Length: 249
Image 1 (cartoon, rainbow, N blue to C red):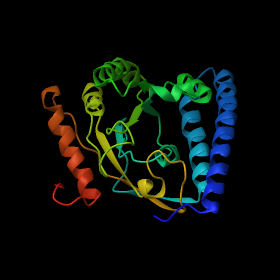
Image 2: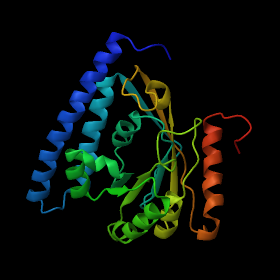
Image 3: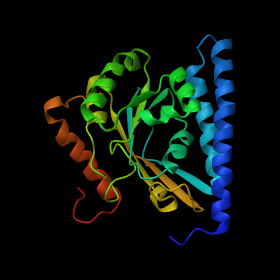
C-alpha cells in the first residue's frame, strides 16, 4: 500500500469526527427509543443504529463493502466469528446488520462515555482480553442471559487486531461460549481490512472490503476437553481463505 496522501488524511479526520457525532446521535436515539418502548425496541435499535454508524463511516472513509453469503444465515441464534486485523472491522461488523446480535468487546471500549452508555444499555459483553481465564468466566456468566433472550453473539477469536501474521492464534473464549450456548458457529472472513487500514493506524485508504459469510459449523458434538482442537480446526480454515501456504486444510 502506498503512503497516505493528504486526501487520505483529510478523509480520516472527517471519518473520526463523523464517528463521534454519530455515537452522540445514536446515544440520544437509543435512550429515547428505550424509554418510549419500555426497552422492547432494544434489538431493533442495536441493528439499525449499528447500520447507521457502520455504513456512513465506511462511506465517508471511501470504503465499498461487498458481502458474500455462502448460503442462508441460520434461523436460530448463532455464534459469529471473524478475523480481526484492523480498526475498520468495527465499521464492517456494524454494517452487516445481523439480527438480535450482541458484540463481545474489550473492556477498554467503556472508557469512551458513548460506548459505555450504548454498550451497557444494549447488553453488550465487555471482557478483559489480557486475562483469558477471567474472560471465559465472564462469557460463561453471560450465557444464561444470552440464551434466554435468544440472542446471537459476534466475537473475534484472535482477541486483538495486533498479532503476528495475517491470522493470529485463536483464543478459546468463543469456542467455550458456543459449547455453553449450544449454538452453531458461523465463520466470517474479512478480506482487505488490514490492507486498507494498518494495525493501530486510523488512516484508511479507498478500496473494497469483501466479507465472506461461510456456512454454519455444527457444534453440538463439541466437548470442553477438545476445545483447543476445534479452535485450531476453524483457524486452519481461515488460513486457507487467507491463502497462507502450507497451513490450510
